[in-house]
Image (cartoon, protein in one colour):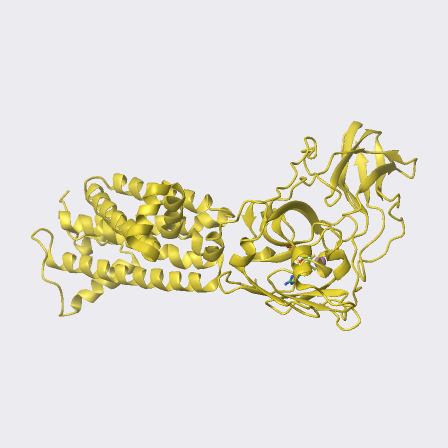
Length: 535
Ligand SMILES: Nc1nc2c(c(=O)[nH]1)N[C@H]1C(S)=C(S)[C@@H](COP(=O)(O)O)O[C@H]1N2
Ligand SMILES: [Mo]
């Protein structure tokens, strides 16, 4: 087999790298800018680089340190790519393995970023695949410079199109001896075309991805340590049973409810919070102002008023934020300003009783969720979290305004749409296991689920089978009365169809009523009931 020139081999490697990185960018428009390999690997480098070296880079390059990092990475990559091209000219498989190794690096970097999901692997995978294909095409495939196009039949459509272009009287000077003039032209034309297309795709995709979202800005946020950390989760709070909701809900599994068709992208750099209306001392805060204040960290279970009995529009997270009480005290509300209206950047509003926000409970202006900046769909950069109230009256995401007014003077978003202005969470309980219509084996069966009565606390959970006597379940410990808790009960299941029911009693001794009522206007009531067939 004839050889191709070293220059062609090196150029092939670089073109393959440009294609890989270029193609990854438009894919990253879908998966978010931080999943693009260059950014992901750059981020990994920033995370792993020792502090003195980072400081050195900042000292030398100033605010251009990130650009310097990316340019440096790109130059390094080009060098490696040229070497891979040379290796591939001798043994194609070595070049392909090299590209695969880079793709793996890109995947690992993308997946280890905070808040990453499996889709974030896509840009590096697609880029790697097309980069490999490019290298093959130039080194062993239809674009190899010493191949006679007629000998490579059947041709790929691309090669055929490029070969047809050979009629063009313009052309390139031969770079080197070796291979015929036509095939070298084809090589250069292919290389030029692909590099140009990949560059356009790359720059266009990068620009689009950056424009689309604030995930890069979110990545850049460093949360302060809490002045008052959350109490530790007590041992045994999580029974870790299959199908039972975990005590702490991972961000990715946290339910999402809002009116936003497109998730608002709020830049923390330009974000402002105005506390105004019927206050003696209006306040305006930037994101940095907020982060500079002492932070409190608390577990709070958030629930949606639209949650049906047995539904899953509820989750428990560790929130980091500034106590709303302190901010309101500073703003100094006027007498009669009994409602705080939270307003989001998209105009959505919620109305919260001023008294609730000032009664000493851990009502927060939250910036962190389970140790991360708020996920964008959960309100980045700042949202409200109020223990004991449904989300629609308290949990404004993408918050930008707190306006003191009265309930008489203003109806928040859901109120004219048929929902109650007041939304305290109702005591509820849910059976997670066994599932409805499942077929557990006869004998001992663990019945388990969750129960909640935020800010009041759950005192008792009871289970009954087929309208029999109520049996008291065992309550797992919880961090505070502001979160749900898990419960379990051992059932000696006998063959046949059975109906399991659960009810909770709050710390004040109020048992949730049997009476079924719909979610509107202020939350569903009734006992969660599950029918199973024991075999
Ligand atoms: N800006 C804005 N905030 C909002 C909403 C909304 O539609 N827009 N929905 C609320 C409702 S009804 C609930 S239950 C909670 C849900 O918060 P989550 O999506 O983080 O779980 O957000 C609240 N905050
Ligand atoms: Mo909700």
